[in-house]
Length: 164
Image (tube, rainbow, N blue to C red; front, top):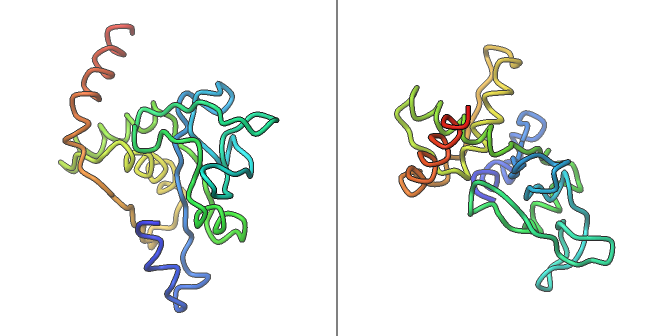
């Protein structure tokens, strides 16, 4: 639940804050290579917990893909499923490409190396902020350090440049 928890329990913030969760869109929802349970999954049971998960029509768990190992899982926590269902939080996704771009942008502009998990949220903020009033306040949960991801990101970005 991360940063949501403190704000959701504050009754004064009701209707003043828009909560957005960002899932791993991998190579895009249509590709089937993602880990976006709300955008590409359905309600089901995994490991004894009812939530949203990536599954086939018979309930068999599908494989997932994300540039971020921490988001590469077929289900989502039941509290997120509940917040989704009561429409307290809106959920979207960022693709691997968007997350990598956000990783690079935050590192270059702010000197902050975000974890790849957090880079998905940064990618959504990059899309969202230009459409917001200037008086808006945006909080992004940078839930981890990206030093563990730097080598992986460098390999991916250098491979992408070699192909271009």
